[in-house]
Image (cartoon, rainbow over all chains, first blue to last red; front, side):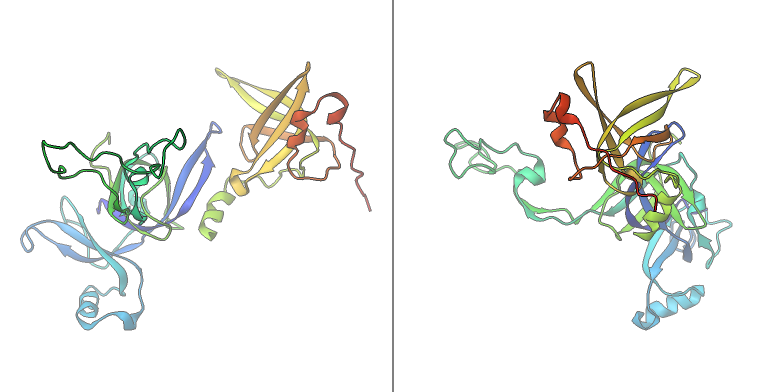
Length: 212
Length: 117
């Protein structure tokens, strides 16, 4: 059994539980992901499955890739991602992984590419407080302030929080809860927010930490 | 957004009465005390309906013993047993925030005639 699946963020909404409490949920369209390749301890040195996800036009696939898909007898997919597994026993190339591997209440880790925010200042990027808006402050409202001392150390320390590119990085949110797993519609409802923009690729795995 | 709508449609109420700002309503809410469940009513004027779909809420304002109070309900919450419309009101704006600044005669709202034809 694969311990993860690939999906696409659809958006957020809220649903009510039995007690009438509104739960914020992210709707994720996940799978079905065909197993394109199985990597084994003997051959590659580790056990993993390669999953495909997303539609891709036949004529957009180059020959080496096309051969890779044909070997597995699977239609071309937009994304290929590996999932480590404990053992490859019972797994078959060409078979599908769907959201039924999860059930409500399970804890999962969701990985995505965070929203790119471009070049941002220290207030947005690092949560600095900024400076006074009034009381004589001049041209100094959202600046970082002092970035170090003078004679010693006569330099700026490495890793100093400064303005720069923010977002667009791989982010994993751990221990999110599955609220609903609908295998008919390939939908996964996850409590809370997941990284990345709408339609972004998500890698959903069983939680590595947290209670199981 | 179709997938989101399909998720929401499982939880939305199809029997939500057609009411809006200006209407006098009685909202019956389920209240759980320990293992017992009872119904509590809140009566007042609807001053706004906001958001849409499953996250829609409405706010009811009432003045009791000279003290104004407002309560916001999630329209599709299962804890709302029923919504009774007592009187339809004729109003000229969607959000009746001006009622907050008024007392006594100022908070009266003209009744809207319901055309049966």
